[in-house]
Length: 120
Image (cartoon, rainbow, N blue to C red; front, side):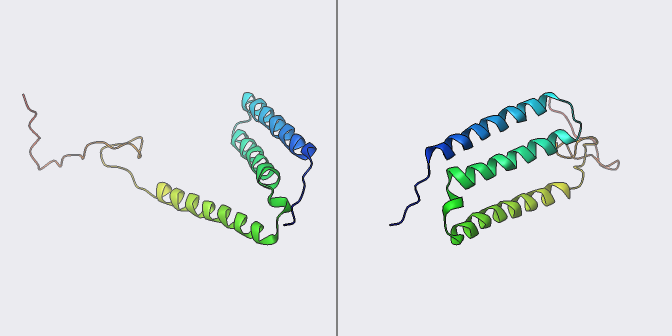
């Protein structure tokens, strides 16, 4: 079996890069960048994800079939996020709630129907 021997210094440098990116994430969160806070945080998160997948999971040193299956996992994740967000963003307002469509309220009574009796 042909195994690639990966030097420990690569793991150590990757770990240091992850720690530095962690501190960078924290530092950017302390600064008010408006809408760009989320963009900066997600960009750093993607860089950290790539470091973990490429080096700690050793995908970088594997054959191209491994790359295909790793990419398929991320494509499947993107499909699941897309389906979830398309469901959430296309929902209409819930009757009885005027401000927040995600909170459920009581159904409004029609003007012709008698008012519900409250138990005593």
